[in-house]
Image 1 (cartoon, rainbow, N blue to C red):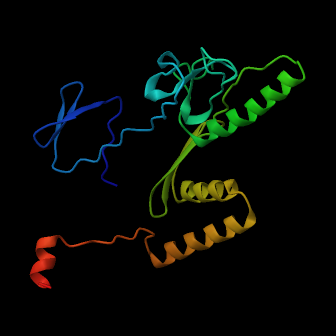
Image 2: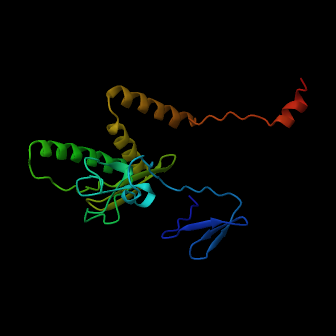
Image 3: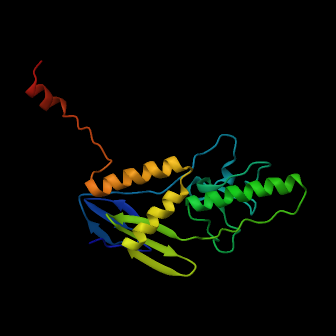
Length: 205
């Protein structure tokens, strides 16, 4: 799709119509879309030492915030480095938050029953992304495979439909997708407002 992906590169700056990478490489361009990723909110009363990369809270293997008592964090706002498979923290994905939420509920139950606590281990179910009309990519860990094109797109649709809460949401979402696919209609709507100079020129009143 005429997209060049550069891995292990960090954009450092944008100067004189050029993207500057940390290694000195430059890409001349007059159009730059810079996505900085997800950062968490800073909560009042939590010490600075409890925050790590991206303002995520350091948590132990039970998702308890380090340095605090009876405070827990899961999902994008947590940074857990005790999982052997993810020593630099878990990816900021919905599956991580879902699994951590279920594990934290089991942890609270075990605490109430005075039973041993189990550390959180993330079970990677793979990653998917839509990249165009009828096109998607999917990386599956077990069995390890990479899928792309229409098959990955259909898998993406199925997974997201199954993730919705009730039948009504699933049916309405499927209907909207079908309409958008066959009509090629975009959900994005733009309301453009002319600048004052042009508006005053066309309508002096």
